[in-house]
Each structure stands twice: as structure tokens, then as C-alpha cells.
Length: 311
Image: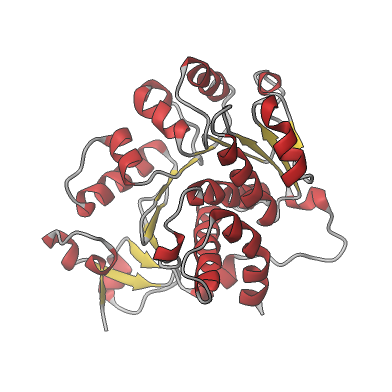
């Protein structure tokens, strides 16, 4: 039985009804599936993408991730992104946040290291990090804008979320020079702020495909069903996740998870696929027993969810 795109979007634009969605990321069974850019991610795809841990590996094997997040009033976002990165298995996690949050960081996440933000604004400062994310709770003031501009000038690919996206919406000159293989993770409003107002999801997806190709980036467009748009314009549909997860901080945790997978050596598209899948799957596992779940619970559930999934 054919699956159609309108099953995964909240509005009923007539164009979406006739779009066939292929199941899985491998070879498709019908001509419509072969020519369709839309693919529904299956559990078998995740098992093929995911790399098991091997004997004699150590913390350096699984990469060093940097989280640049938080402001004095939004320290929780930095902690949640760091927690997502830690529990998703990055070998080392370093967080750059205001020093006023150090007690909270050292108390709640003693495994996570700290670096001053001004120490990152040098040419060689970022070379030891395998993955860098920026944005959760960063703020939109002049200092945050200056920090983002200085970091972008260092020519590294980033995972950009939350306030980093809000800044990019105000500074299209920075978005235009974002490094290829970066990942941006907007929800609906952030996406429209970046790329213009849309009246339906069909048009939004077409813009996402165009921009992902044009900029050479991966766009993670978050909703009930998250759309991962690759640099080639493929739309990969993630169906894990549920309404019990509709609480603040979930996006911060997802940013940390994706950062951890990039640090572990996965290409941007694969890191986004794995991050979205296991983020939602952890929420699904928790929601089997409770009415609602918090972002912290999702982060801490990750290792068990991955272990159970892999059998």
C-alpha cells in the first residue's frame, strides 16, 4: 500500500496528497518510490547506520564535542544540550557558558568540561573539537551576535539551533556564508523567520529542499514528524516521538544528541537521522509508562533505548 506525504504534515495542501513516500533509505520497490525525494526512516536503516562500540576503544575514539550555549537567565538550555551530548556518547564534552553557571554544571554534570567563550575566538582554538554546536539559550543581544559572527569567521561547520537561528534570521549575511555540512535545527517559526513566511507545509518543504541544496547544509525541520532535509534535497521523515514530549528543553537535548553523533564521526546527514530517531525513541519508551516526559528524562533514557534497540 502506497504511503503519501500528507500523512506526515498537519495541513492538507493538495500537492502533498499525491507525493509518494518511499519506505527506508535503500533501494525502493516501485517507480514512484524510486523517483520520490521523500523517504520514511525505518528501524533497519538505523541499524545499518549505527556503529557498535569496539574493544580497545577509548574516550578519544568517540570524539570531543563543544557546546556553546547559555546566558545568565537561560543557563538551563546549556545544561540540557550538554546532557544530551553526554548521554548520546560523545567521548568528551566541553561546554562554553557564562561562568555564573559553573556551580550548576559541576554539580549536575561533573563529566562535562568548561571553556571560557573568549578563549574560543582564536584561529586555532576550535581545532581540537570534532563537533561544535551553538545556540541554545545563547541570547540575541549584541554580544551574542558578535560571538556568532566571530565564530563563523573561523570557517567551521556548526550545529546551529535556537538563538543562533534567531541571529541568522537577523543577519542573512552570516547565513549566506555558513560552512557546508553544517546542520540547522529550526522549528516551524524559526524556519519561517529564516526563509520567509509560509502558509502550508508543502511550500515549507520545497523551500527547505532548495535551501539545503543551495547552502550545502542539512536542515532538521522539527514537528510531530521531523523532516531531515539533506544537502541533495532528500526529505527523510522521522516518525519517532510523541505528544508526551511536548515540553520545553526537548530541542536543546536534540541539539546535544546530534552534536555527539557528529563528534563520533558520523556525516551530518547520518548524525541528524540517528539523533532524531533516538531522541524520539527515548521519548516513546518513556511514554509507555507515563503521561508526559521531561527533556532531562529523555537525555538520561538514551543509553538504555539504544542498548534495547540494538538488542
